[in-house]
Length: 147
Image 1 (cartoon, rainbow, N blue to C red):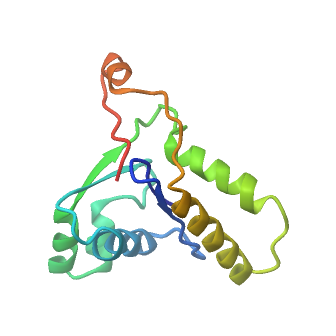
Image 2: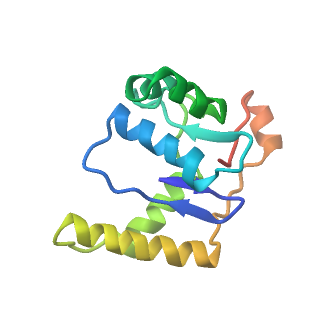
C-alpha cells in the first residue's frame, strides 16, 4: 500500500507475491506513474528484507535502477519500534470497510479494493495522527509521515 496522508491519497496493489521484484516495480510506479513530477519522494518503510535499493538493481538495469533511486529517499521504521503508523491505520480501515467478508477470487478482491481506494481518494480521507515532530525529537528519531 502507498499512502500519502498529506494529500489524502492511497493506492493498493494486489499481487500474488511480495518479492524484491514486486517491490522494485512498485517503486518504479511510484516514481513514473503516481508522482512523476516530484523531485524527491520520501518513502517510509518497514524493515522487510525485500525493501532495499538492491532490489531495484536486481530487477532493472543499473542505469534504470539508479534513475529510479535518484527520486527516492528511504526512511526505515526502527527495528524494535512499533509499526503502528498511518499506513497501518489505513490498512485497518481497508480491512474493516472492504475485506471483512469472503471474496470468491483475486479479481473480485482487486475490484473491491479499487472501488474502496477510489472512494477514499475522492474523499481525500486522512488519518488522524497524534504523533507530532516535537514528540519524535524526544524519542531521538524523526518520523517522516508522507511519501
